[in-house]
Length: 486
Ligand code: NAD
Image (cartoon, rainbow, N blue to C red):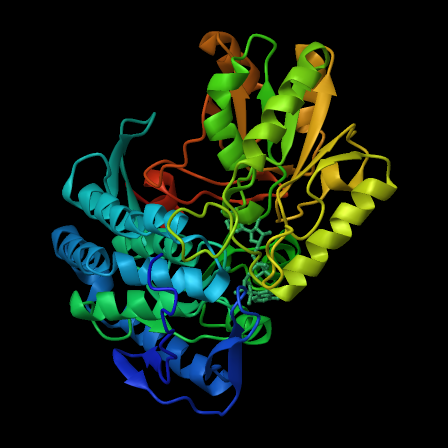
């Protein structure tokens, strides 16, 4: 057991214009522990006046401050120092995450170092030669044109609770490298990651006003998105909220990137080694109790091997250690909040009512009488027209679906309005690659599950717009300006 009594330190201030400032209003948000179901922390919510102040600071920092005008080496230095500060806080980041939303500390400790890696990746990009802010091209008429890539401006970030630190880091590190300034609104369930990052950026010497933090719920988030001085919104969250935010941005042509939901498929080709696949497949079918956007929630198996697969998969997920997420041996914790617990239960009932066969789980694990727990749940006899095959459940519910041949497997995988992630398991990696090319999704792994922050991540279809991570992630914070010499 780690520090099961890790006490959340409730913030009392916001971070605006390089200072820790008192809230202008007196609204509060309560974070409820998903393990004890009791209030764990109460902290102030930003009011419109706080957002106005934060946007004004970010605007001034962009329009007249030093950050967008610094050399790339100077910006890289601040990013590197931020990474060092983040590294010094890995255990705090992991423990805060566990205490706020119940992610197992085992997963928190695996994920927490990624934030520093992201900051270092963009620092390396600035210091290296793989990326250029100005490219020269020769026109067909023989003349010279320069393509100058310039920061898009003042950016707002809106992030969810399910991987708060890493999702915020993707945005801030890439945008800072590009020369942008920020106002960030974390999710109401997990505000602390924003505070840790603000602290690290301040210690790293980021100029005042470049990063501002105003915590709050959806309403204050929408106020920020509507703010006329915000040039770009970087959003991660549900497809429903993403559509709304995209529409608001379109009204004034603000730039927007959207990282949204998923209903990703793992295709087990008929030559796949199921035993070898199990460790990665089982873990990524319901990571963080299924509260991960790229979870492989539909598993497509050849009809002839369906029985063999189901037996093995059910045995494997049944062995997950479920319990208090502070226990370093626990892989499977509670859902993040009561509303999530209720929503997942509703989907399980819908699955049964629509004719799918429940072969494992379906409710609270016997030994957990408190906390928002739902046991690993597996359905078979699932078809693409069922709700549980179409909608993102964001809980530990996996649908096993069968196919007759490769074409049908591709058809089922693509029969989704989402297209975020996926996996192909096969003994023949060339064959798997060809199948991967036919799947309409943004990120796929052959024989495993790789999510590497130095590579672009993002969605096809209703899973999003744009990419985060890698060079592509920085491009979304830049505008291309064409300067030709006549
Ligand atoms: P959510 O959409 O309810 O909320 C996300 C954030 O948006 C929160 O900070 C919330 O306060 C804010 N928000 C909600 N409505 C808003 C509005 N109208 N205007 C401005 N801000 C608004 O999502 P959630 O429940 O916090 O997170 C889970 C969702 O996030 C899932 O759908 C999951 O797939 C998705 N997600 C996607 C990725 C990805 O990379 N594609 C990664 C993680 C999570």
